Length: 558
Image (cartoon, rainbow, N blue to C red; front, side, top):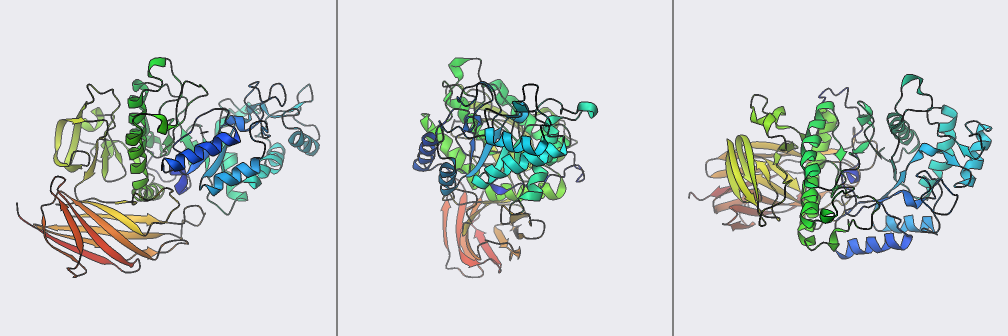
């Protein structure tokens, strides 16, 4: 299982909401149908939010010694009925558990007569024997030829999509196409063909594919992943820099094999701290997905680790962040500036913005500094450069004024991320287990003390009319001495499936105790103050989204 700031360069369609989140358990292994059902049950029993289940290559027979289910090759198109005797039934059960489904493909070896006799016969008849090998038992992979492509999608891809496949993970296509006169990359061309086929043939949904890097320009098509990363802290340490600076060429949707893919040191293969820190880093990346190679020594079921409660908190944080992340993804679509971006985008004159390479912005208002080194006696000491402005440390409940350099200590449970003062950052409530849910309550995280503006973007999530069918809700705060005003404007625009009434929970950080709280002038409002966290929480009753709300808080002077 598993920037170029020019808008003209960043042509990729706006990502489907569920592809920003992938199942919290993903690993290349010969899973049976019962294994998949058991994993889904364990995810549910452990209350792990999850959205996508990817079936890695052993869903199919492999080109090699026919239908033996062996590892004779990587390519295959027909269900491995030894492992999955009733494919449609399994896919139906996966959908019934609120997962989207992707199948893994390694197409390079073509369509084999023994592995997929029905598909082979249909395509060979339509192509009149064209593209056959010398033995006449294999149709060579020839995606750069129109007749092959039409027959392939008609006979194989359409068939599996009718069974319930939502999108495709294409892999192992790093060579040139068969007609390599022009040096055309197979990876690039697969991205182009698969994505545009979905645009034309699956108009009921937003097109998305999952594939490797295919060169500059390829990013306009696929959600990407960075390949087979080694399981160690050094590899983890490189990924924050890699992910943020990829935005310099317009590649905004990198994902990684969280936890690492393969190992050279068995002593750390399932190091709970390493897996935890990788997952915590993944919280603040565009694509959230664990994965590993086919090795029984590697564990990716996070509920099997002793520190699972801490890992689960990270996964829940990811799902809490979704409204903010999706809003930033829309902004990336509109502007070409990726969700993750280096500090020098905003502070180009500061030398530190280039020196502190593992720090980056996650959207407009969150500064992230992932921990990528092993702790000493349970504590990770991190030197952090804070740019100009004031930053609320969510993990340590303190306001830090920049520009400055500061050494901070973090436990395993703490993640170094910081809200910009003045920011209003929308969160899902903790009850959300699937991003296709439409909660009727949202949490607004607000750092008091400075004027600020933000917004909430929403759409139907999996359709192609997002260019016109969507809504935005403007969010604003006005700081005036010990008085704070927080304004949620009426929602503008509309989309299918949106809630019409919504309540809000305002978590206002860095405040003194309130003296007065009003919502639309009404003082009969529920609120609490946490002195240790310097946080005022105000419960705004449900209101129509078509109307606005104003919250006014007067704080005591300390």
